[in-house]
Image 1 (cartoon, rainbow, N blue to C red):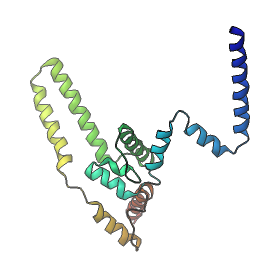
Image 2 (cartoon, rainbow, N blue to C red):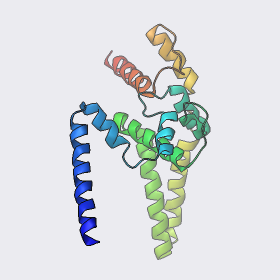
Image 3 (cartoon, rainbow, N blue to C red):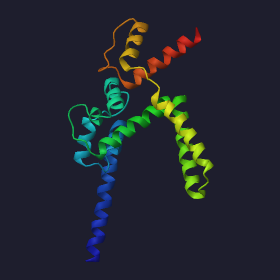
Image 4 (cartoon, one colour):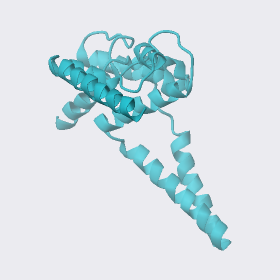
Length: 193
């Protein structure tokens, strides 16, 4: 019995080597496709075919709908079923946005205030020093300022972009990446004048 398992191991090694030779003969892109799908089931591959792969292909309309309404269904190109993978995909898209454009100063300040509030609450729980409650309340008030400030609506920004560019833009066709690069370039151009 031990002898037959060794022969199977040898057969597996030869089979594996044949597969490697097969893949080496294909162009580099096929190798990328192969590695991208390693470990994914047919359902997972199907899932990634119905969701937006990146901010380069996802329309700004879908992005804005998720940000404004919280409806994660806009991650799908067509109708899909929400699962944990859907939320993970949305987090991946957000991370791609952050990697490409970074965080704006206001959002960074909000993160700092939130972190400060958490640390103050932890310190209060650990020490029970009542003066920390005043500092906690002041930090909460500062943080509330970010929640109550009125943001500019997407369609108002779209109107300004269209006027600046001189033509109409369809938010269902322009990608998230192109949209934010346009805004970034507009702000650079206006800031240099």
